[in-house]
Amino acid sequence: MKLPVISSIRKPVGLAVILGAALMVGMPAKADPSIGYQLETIAEDLGFPWDLAFLPDGTVLLTELDGRLRIIRDGVLDPTAITGVPDVYRASQGGLFDVVPHPDFATNQLLYLSYAHGDKSANATRVVRAKFDGQALSDLEVIFDVSPTKDTPVHYGGRIAFGPDGKLFITTGDGFNYREEAQNLSNTLGVIVRLNDDGSVPSDNPFVGKDGMRPEIYSYGHRSPQGLLVTDAGAVYMSEHGPQGGDEINLIEAGNNYGWPVITYGIDYSGARITPFTQMDGMEQPLKYWVPSIAPANLELYTGDLFAAWQGDFLVAGLVPGDVRRVDMEDGAAVGEEILFAEIGERIRGIQMAPDGSLYILTDGDSGAVIRVTPN
Image (cartoon, rainbow, N blue to C red):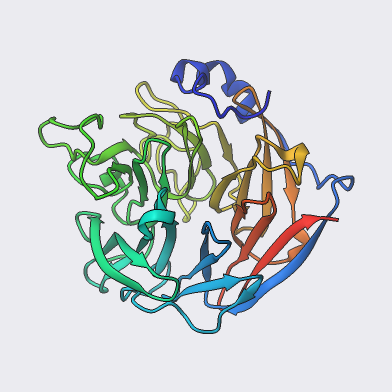
């Protein structure tokens, strides 16, 4: 059985059993030559492409970190950007991040955007929703701001995903210089937030009604989470950047502490030790971690038919050295890893599955591209 889209692996007790296999996968294998594919460049010369969204009518939406929301129709990039997009704080890792349609987009035309908001001295991740008529955004409404603001242009998080119950999950980063705040439940740095679709707080969130704790918080102890997905059964998975080493894939459960910066498998960029601990009571272990880092930029679960051998496996976009990692999942454990698409020769910002089972790859940089992957 492949990675479950059922709820039976959601209990932490199951993780303890599988960690030995999950963490000791060994060196990744090279791509299996028997699985043939072709790469087709759909769009190029983009300003740091960050995310894609697939709409019911076949339209593909594309965000650029530089602040533009673009349209791809019938495999062609519209040269005119969508209007009505809010101004973003564009610096270093800051800019326009995710775009996600409401689960009932076909009837309500609502899109959700995440982006860096503010200025050099005070900025934070913001999430808004707006109506989209096919050309422009209107009726923009702020539904969430990370608090407090920070003076660093990095570690925003900014990934959005809806669960099958219509609840909205948002990742936030620790702001880099404020890593200890990821353990502080009175703010929303270094956490995953869970909201209703209008930005209100669900009554069953784990910290609702607890003094000094933000009710939006679903999990905490995160560093720079840029990958997020929720299965059809409601299981939540996240990938995040460690420091130098210690990138992780985690199974996220309500109220749990994922350890940063108290435990980590990485070290500081200076070479100094951040903490002597890789494990601690009350803090969760990852399903998988990487040393050295691969800089995981997003996380996809492949459920399509075009590449049947990959069904139920994770696909992880790696910025460093620049490839996609297929993490082979069996019964909830990571049992193998394969390097894919290294021939592209670029930093990979994202990999996403289209409704037809094809894959779309985003390359990073000021001349980024969108590449479609289909079988030979």
